[in-house]
Amino acid sequence: MMDNLYDVIIIGGGPAGLAAAIYLARAKYRVLIVEKERFGGQITITSEVVNFPGVFKTSGKDLTETMRKQAEAFGAEFILAEATGFDLTGDIKKVITNRGELFCFGILLATGAHPRKIGFKGENEFKGHGVAYCATCDGEFFTGKEVFVIGGGYAAAEESIFLTRYAKHVTIFIRGDDFSCAKSIADMAKNHEKITVLTNTIVVSAEGDTALRLLKYKNIKTGEVTEYKAKNGETFGIFVFAGYEPETEFVKNIVKLDEKGYVETDEQQKTNVDGLYAAGDVCVKNLRQVVTAVGDGAIAATELERYAAAMQKKTGRKAKRKDNARQESAEDSKETENKDDTLFDADTKVQLKAVFSKMEHPLLLKLYLNEKPLSKELENYVRTMAKLTDKLSVEVVREHTEKETPCVRIFRQDHSDTGLAFHGVPGGHEFTSFVLGLYNAAGTGQSIDESLKEQIGNIRKEIHMQILVSLSCTMCPELVTAAQKIASMNPLVSAEVYDINHFGDKKEKYNVMSVPCLVINEDKVTFGKKNIEQILQLLS
Image 1 (cartoon, helix red, strand yellow):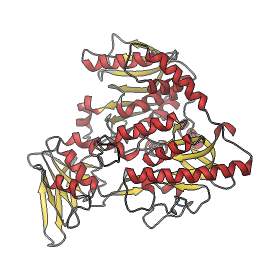
Image 2: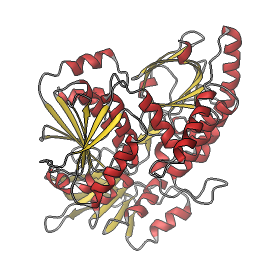
Image 3: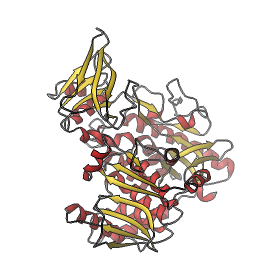
């Protein structure tokens, strides 16, 4: 248990969690961030951040990546895993994840929140076929189409402006008399030539066949109902930006929540449970912004410092920091920096080497290429990655019948097919999921619950999963990683990932207007992020 003992475990890798990690690691405590999707949180989908003090202008992704590097430089550790439960009895707490059990003195909940559904007729039916929740992920699908946005807050205003890059026109429905966000961003939306704002308006229903064809909306003051009908066989999009719901489902029976499900804390971010703190958007608070999230994280961290010190003294136990590991990695990175390739930066090479060192068996990456530039990009990408380890070898299949090229297929050392493949170039948000796919295919890989292992082993029929993604989508990697894990454990299951921006035929065939999209055996189509358990339910 000593190797898995931390002073503090932070659940969630958004701004609040990263800020807390910076403070704790700098104070020489051993801290681990457990993140189930991608480090950075919801703010990574925001293309422009202009109200963070001291930073004139940046993107959400760049801002949080700098925070992550700061935390790492001070010695914080990171793991991609999903926390599923806790044992908070005793002085040493247990965090249960889908990659095993972890132990610590204190815990910080920084799980954030996810987009809230409205509940209008047709919302669930057309999710992925016209109804969306992420402009960055799905905006491009509505190029040249009419788009309707539901919401009157900051996200609705900002994302509506972003959507004008693609949409023919954007109409915003606000339930109240005006926007509820800052006047500066509201005025930008109101004054935009491609945006119309309708106040006191709600959506009644969204209807159609395989896509949206009819929208009914109502003025709640006059009672007038208006219909919008798509013309000439066209469709349209509806984006919902109506606030967020806290990610607290897995702690609802452990910690005190308010009526909306947010965690209640005191001024020091402490919950009603000793040793358990909360920070960021998951908490009850008046303002949910990056600046308040990092403030919460800093406050919680200083309190957890005191708590961890007290527990060290009480138990006589001390978590062993791995400062030397980072130092050795830095030396490794200097060595690789001298090479002529520049595809992966020094920090990325460090992370890749750490994963490759844990691979139990070598893998063969077979490339199926064509004459297009994307094939050259994929070949360079894969060969550059393979140079970093002796666990990967590359083979270009010169004569093949692979129609969906370019493609990289993953084989074992004995040339048996793992069932994992990526069509396109696995960059952007799919970089991590691709690397985890290699790790899972090369041996035991990520640990999962025994019950899930049994369910995967009990699959007795051939199942082909296609996962359609966009490299800019923050919700796709969780589904990709989960599907690949299942495929790596059962030879009857395959999981092939497609960058939908290069495989438009897939988009047309399955009428995809949102990602991630999971297609099972060519006919069962579902949308949204899913974990292993949720995929297994679909497969059964």
